[in-house]
Image 1: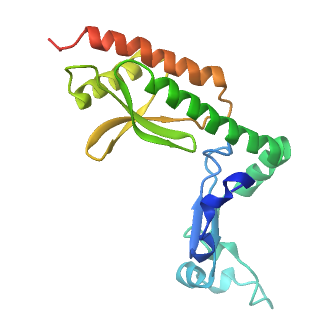
Image 2 (image 1 turned 180 degrees about the vertical axis):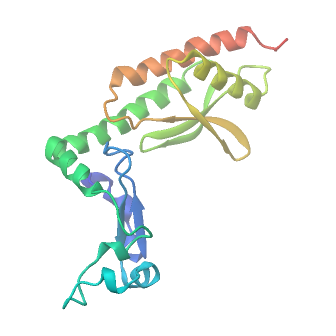
Image 3 (image 1 turned 90 degrees about the vertical axis):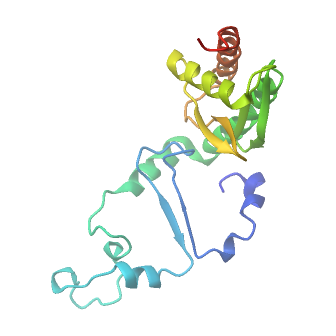
Length: 205
């Protein structure tokens, strides 16, 4: 949304009833911080709002009372942390971080696809892609799971998994606020190193 060249991904958003996203993820705001856009807030206010006498404001019946927009009546001032983030970094710095993550994810995807026994399961989308480890003669799901366990047991990097089209795959996601290009390339090197060890130790005893 904040990168002009990516706004085509939002085509049709004007037809949505509501949109929620979390700046505490890719924008780097401190947890927790969520933003909600509503095309028409009235149904939500009518559902969640309560107006006992002690919550009324005298002589003001039509004020915007945000206690009526969510379940809790009280909430932390989450918008302040977003304000500080924008003041400290500015839109251009935040845009460049996102652009870097996307570019580095492309580099990582190409590098992983070129490693022996690796194959991309999904193409990169923004800063996310998935892959499998499938050395010759080894069932891909088993080898991929063994590699993931080896990576997370090793502790230098941490990755998660999912199932895509019935296949066990490893997710590679770049989104850490202070991530550097060398961190991403280091992760690729860790995968290469540990895959060799996993392959040597196959089959399991």
